[in-house]
Amino acid sequence: MVLTDLKILIKKIGVSILIYALPLGILAGGLYAITHFLTN
Amino acid sequence: MALDQSLSKRITRDALISIGLYALPVLALVAWFAWTGETPWKHPVKNYSQTTAPAFLSFLEPFFKHLKSWGFIALALALGVLEFVLGLYDNKWTATEKKIDIICFVTPKILIPPVVGYFSLHILPTILPGLANVFSWVPFWGGFFIIAVADDLTQYWYHRIHHQLPFLWRFHRTHHSAPYMGIAMASRQNFIYTVFFSQTYLTTTLIYLGLGYPALFVTAIKTLITMTAHSSVPWDKPFYKYRVLHPVAWVLERLISTPATHHAHHADTTDDGIGNYKGNFGNMFFIWDMIFDTGIITRQYPASYGIKFYKEEEWYAQFLWPLFKSRKDGSELAKNGPEVGDEVEPVSPPQLAGAA
Image (cartoon, rainbow over all chains, first blue to last red; front, side, top):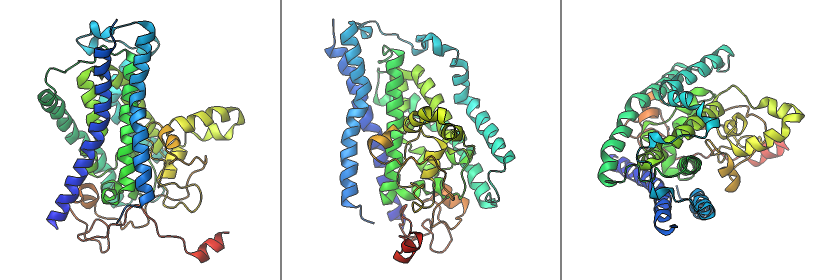
């Protein structure tokens, strides 16, 4: 039972991290790219 | 409980569309800088407190600053009192519901700030060293749209998958278990759902990277919209009643969550054509539901709220499952309880015939 709960918790935290990291990667990556590729 | 294959395909398709949506504000910035020739990143503002909002918004700053601290609690209490005075809880606020609503409202306000504080003051400087305020050159309007999309689209996804992935449903069930609607619903959540709220940490990270000032405005607007969408005070009704306001209603109900669209999400059935607990996932913006075709707009309010499999589980099980389990027989939150998901019992053919 404890193992089942632990598995659910780990999966839940994993999903939370994925939903956090994907948009952060897109946004931070995009803003970082602006500073390197847009120069006048 | 296996995930339906067509649903799995829809989630994948919508996730790919979301990548484009997240990138939109950044692409808008690229277009703006290419057009104007501005290069603000060459002379970055080192401290985001030096940035300012456009003049027409600056008068709102003190209000928004306080809303984030004591203002939210004051607003929630004021709305709560109004709901009571209007008798909108009827007789459904039982001792169990009272306990859950109050504990869910108070506890996260004490326990979440230290967690988020530790994340921003210790974890972020460790994993992203030297990057504090690196994006403080982003203009106010750019930061505003970046935070608005990042925070709310992330919350849309976090919310949606807790409905659509059966193994996550029980972390979100507490938010839907009450047989009534009210301001208390906005904070009525399982603690683990709240502590791992992805968008809290995403917005905190973007603040660390330099978008703190626009975040102040977005968070305040979002708080107002989500709180009033959960409230039993139907502020949107006049927009549906008076013909002259119909064009405003048309835009409002597609742009942001209203009591009508969000109450539909808390309905205990979809049989009446009003309830849409399998959709209307938007929190601040409703446009995500429009884009991903998960929204239904009826301008009506459901007759009843809650979930079919509710067994009035103990407050500790609803607040802290799976750490604490319910003792109620057959409960989803009990030891070895069934994984029901947000399904309701299918309507049998005779009932359908009767309804017709």
